[in-house]
Structure formats: structure tokens, C-alpha cells
Length: 241
Ligand SMILES: [Zn+2]
Image (cartoon, rainbow, N blue to C red; front, side, top):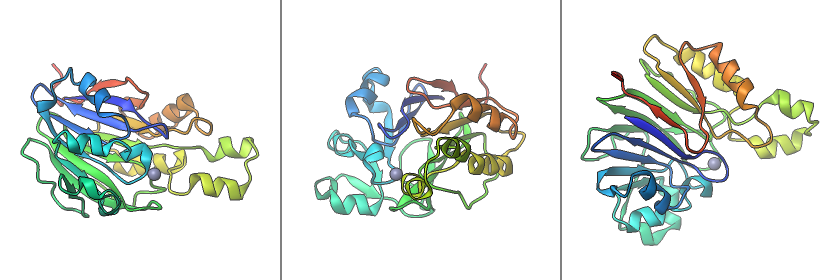
């Protein structure tokens, strides 16, 4: 199983989990055409498309995916505002099991953002248990035996303070996003001997320091840590050889 990052951040989010026969698309913040190219036009392997929330950087292109006949799962508020995709899409609810005919098992869980928003616990025999979570200021749940964690690390209080950002503006820009210290706390409590990869998502262009964030996280986990730059590919197989 390979993770492919097609975009991560306010300019558009999209992640693909792909093996030889199946693919799962997480977030529809880039045009469907880019997904087709990333899959070498083998779109019949797409088991489904899940979207965490209605903000454009995560869902702007969801209609393209739905109209192409993909199995699309979206929050109910997004369905309400996009009546024309209603015929194609299913809605997410907390701790449902998303009905997909594939080897992916996907459980959404609700997180705190300024709109209805979900993280996903995704299992597959090739890669084990993967947690995906973005656009929330904190995650209140603890997860057992995670093999891969893809979590937001949006900004650093230190960087913002050093730049003299005033509190009101900070609050407006950052509410609903995860600070690196909060991300580290979350990763620390979910660290375990089976954890293989940590990928930091949705870094702010101005208020994040990718190298510093990686070293902060390396202090709390015992596995490789990556920043989800566009074009990143990582092997997630439990048995890579
Ligand atoms: Zn958002």
C-alpha cells in the first residue's frame, strides 16, 4: 500500500491510499483529473472517496468525483448545499462503517471544527490501522495499535508569538486547527511499538516550520516522520519486502 499526497494545506487537500488492485481517495480538494493521472488512469480501482468536511480546500471538486460514478461519502451539511450530488453520495455519521466493496474498512469519527467534520480510522490487510485526522484543534479520542498516523500540525504558537501576531487575529485564523504542541501530545499518547509512520498534514504556509515540526515529533515517537508535501509517496505495507 502506498500513500500518495496530491495536496495538503489551504490550497487543496487530497491523499490516495493505493495498492495493485484498490485505491481510496481521502479529500476532494484537487481536480479529479489529478487523481486520474496519479492512478495512471486506472480509475476502476477506486473503491471510494471520503471527504472530512465542507470547506473548499477539502471538498471543492467532490461533484467531479460523484459525477464520474465514484462512491462518494460526505458530511450531511455538504450534501444539503450540493443537491445535485445527492443522487450519487452517501452521508457520513459518527462511527458508522462506510459500506464499500473493498478490503478497506473505514470508520469516521466526529471532531471539533467550525463545521461538521470527521476523522477516519482506516484498516486494510496490507497496511494495518491508519488514522487520518485534519482540521480540528484537538482529538479527544485515543486509538489502540495504530500503524500509521496522518495528523494535522497546522501552526506553532512560538512562531506566531515571535511574529507578533495579535491574539484576536490568531484566534480567527487558527480556530479549528491543530497546534504542533497539541499534535505532539496526541502522538505521544497514541505512540506504540507497532507505529510505522507519522505524516504531518496541512501545515500553514506562514506559521509552520516543517523541519522543526519533524524534530519535535521525532522526540515523541520511534518511527519515521514526514511532512505531507505535494508529491510525497510512502510505502505503508506492514511487510515491505
Ligand atoms: Zn476546514
